Length: 261
Image (tube, rainbow, N blue to C red):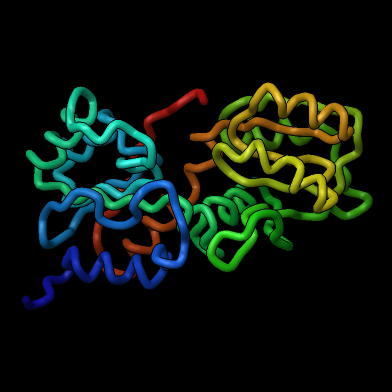
């Protein structure tokens, strides 16, 4: 098939993403890559955090050939039947011949386009090191040390998160503690708080919070900031989308379907 400027074959697009994100070396909770097959040629991609019905409807309305997301379908332990919400979502994708591409952990940990490295850049705290659980070949907790004279307090961290993520975080723990080392892991990574403490973090940021998170933060004397699962994972898919637009000369648009969690 001859190459048409402003287009890329679905096969070539998938090959490029596989080479870039290396999903085959990462054990995950859902399949990464092509989850629903659509058109053989792509000229327009809609990217989003999650493949919700709202996002699919936007992709259909925009005439997209592919939908690229962080949270796709077919999670381990889910009811596999194609009924209800799943049926409606799949019917919309198949009816419009839209490819669904999803990358979960591979997009979290990528050292350039990943959620964690991109979140640090957005917050103004570029990753200086990695720690915690290893996924692929890299730790999933990023950290950044502030200069002694630039130490922050919990209020300043909350203000930075609110300004950059457009969502007010929930802070627990010792809110009087001076913050010199900040660590983070996007999404539902609240249970890596102990790993962040072991890394010497004064403040750990993730998306969600559990009942047990508060007790650990209080008793360890650190700050924990729940900044929103959705809010902390908007960065990666947008960075990846920009990369694809530049690489293949195709149109890529981010659609946000806000989620308070």
